[in-house]
Length: 277
Figure 1 (cartoon, helix red, strand yellow):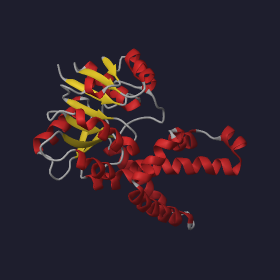
Figure 2 (spheres, rainbow, N blue to C red; figure 1 turned 90 degrees about the vertical axis):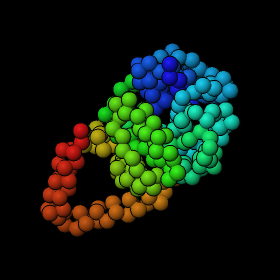
Figure 3 (spheres, rainbow, N blue to C red; figure 1 turned 45 degrees about the vertical axis):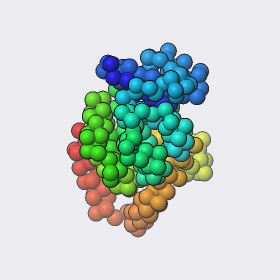
Figure 4 (cartoon, rainbow, N blue to C red; figure 1 turned 90 degrees about the horizontal axis):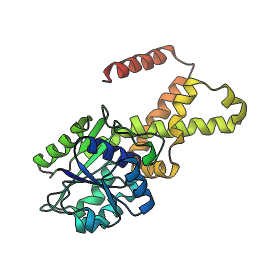
């Protein structure tokens, strides 16, 4: 039986555990909070749990790091002495360049290999109680091998995510960070800004009138602020470039509400929805 260790069994790790167990994997939940691990066990996300990496990691085929992006390096340092050479190590973080640079010294050639991964899915909700076995099905998953990563190991990582139903895309870490700055991180920032705008304008009557467009545009403002501040910080340069482009587009639209620009926005929206599987 294939054996996976999930370090951090919250929404992402719990959903991963549920999906893997349905496919015949034996799943070990590893963490530092025994109460949270017990909740994951009751939820059915794992077969067994432990707070001891020396018990969890021997014999693991895959180790998936599911800590927030600003905690991944510390998590990897803590677990690295117990990781066997055969174990494929991956993460699910939404920033890849900074993570790879931090983890590269921990996984030099000749030992276990780290391959960055980012499943583009999730929720503004957190915790294993919100985990779903189908969370990864149909979602894009970006795999970001380092330049020296063996081809066979990259293929193994991609096969892992395809088995869960994800649509695998291979990118360099920096190309990934530039792309998600536009399609993921900037929308979160805009959602926060919209909610702050409503608050500054007098939220009470506005919230009673707000309907679908405001609800949809601000949904992700309900996400964990500390988690998203860490993501913004880790991808600061790419996010600031995306913000500059956005401010330019907003400025052009504000100059007389130009119809050609509005038509182009609708055409791009039609293309986006058509291209989505």
